[in-house]
Image (tube, rainbow, N blue to C red; front, side):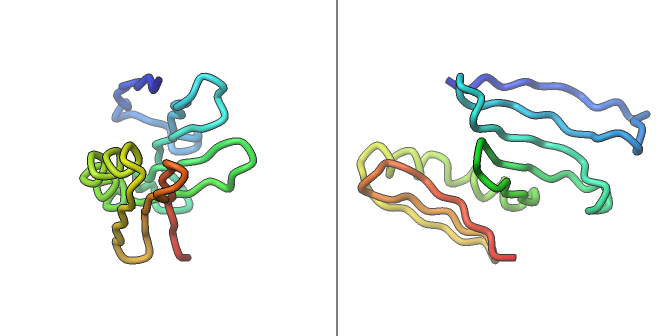
Length: 108
């Protein structure tokens, strides 16, 4: 079960601090989604998707929008053991019909 935390960020934030919020998406806390401001990326808002023994994937707002628009079709494909794929530039997401999983890819 996924529990969402909704917080607002103060307009008087300290740019010397790490500015991100992490939400665990499973009870074992081995998978997470983090949204934050990254100083190395000129403080633009980015989302990080990662987990235990997984290299985190950092995506821009447009890729989060691609995932959001595709969410229902991804869930349908996973439920029906079907396949679904979508690309947005260097970002790809697809489902594997046999395992009921979705994968995210980003070419650097």
